[in-house]
Image (tube, rainbow, N blue to C red):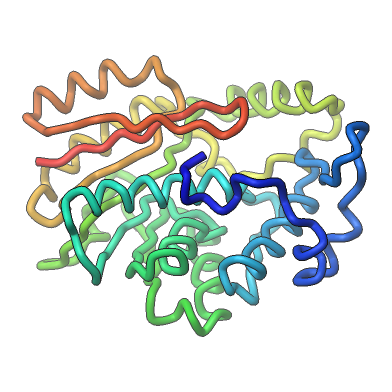
Length: 285
């Protein structure tokens, strides 16, 4: 993980349970003698997230609707720190303003960006339930109200249009795009994760929450990012850096070719958490 990521060390379950006692019901000692939770159990992951947000990020209230994506926080923190590195290299000073495309019901990136670096954050999403949940997570924490603005993208054909207001400027945009091309593909991916965690097929509905728009879209990650890049040209004067996670390395060459054709400067930042490898694609005009 990023050197500044405070989750580089094992979870401090004693302190986490003190902050959020409901977590204790999900904690057990594994065969190696370490305290842990079942990361395939959605309620357990939600409880852990609530405890982490309370202990480390001063978030007293956080929730998501049933079956929506409960994002593992350590990996999300990594993305925030790497963006901060990019901004620091350009000597971009506060106040810094960022846009999270596809904020989701959890609102996790705006929360972390505002709490770790005091950034002003905007989050957008096409799903009305996700927007309502993200707004709820903001208004129930007084320390977020003046730092985070959640906006509904009403036109599925647009990403930035209708979200970035006239004369509005952003130092960066970020995105964790849907990586499956269909609901069937998303289901198969979840089943693989369950198998790796020793879970049975009939446990699928309780694990790895995430409504359709969070896990898949037509064309999958590659097509979504092509659309994102194509539309970013229209906002090259409003945004300093565009960024996105790219989970599938095989998608990079075509995306980089597209950026080169559009005369965008671009580079990739590798990310790794445990066995999971990903990367951040960064570009500017």
